[in-house]
Image (cartoon, rainbow over all chains, first blue to last red; front, side, top):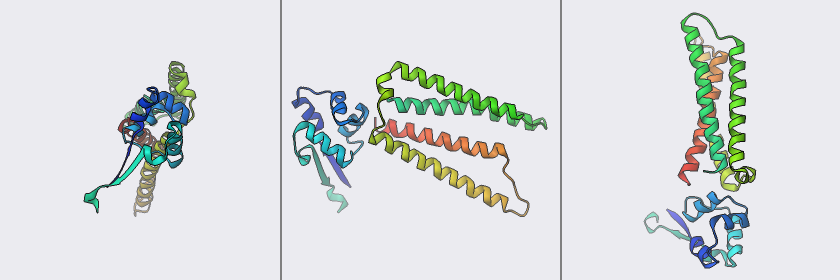
Length: 73
Length: 137
């Protein structure tokens, strides 16, 4: 099974301990959705993923990591 | 708890409570050989609208910022999935209704039976929304 991990939590802290609410307002999502993304319980749309990466000034692949589980192959 | 999850709870609990009272009065009336007057249904619908409106306004007053925020993509997805789940229930109920109506001695679904199907599907929709919000919280 494929998984998508992300570095949002770490990046928030590196950007002046940005709160989930502040990030949510910048990318026009709710705080609950940002929390769900951070916890890997919701995978954002490509557009939202690009907006998140743009907030941190990072390329998409530095924020989100896609990996396929070895057992699924 | 997000505003839309709260409204889903309001919808679920108010519909279960108010329609629960209505259908229990229908069952009581049937067991005594009578029927609930049309006014009973009208009163139920008015009570439901009033209760849901008052509670939704109360929740919005408590957290106006959350209430004013537009739906984001996750909330839209949750709503769509819940509607699809409720539709599957509605479609299944319609198939059963057609099947029973086609029997040699047909069972015709009355207005209250159809209303019950709609209420159950609406409860399925609200429940599905709440479960999805809880799972991703």
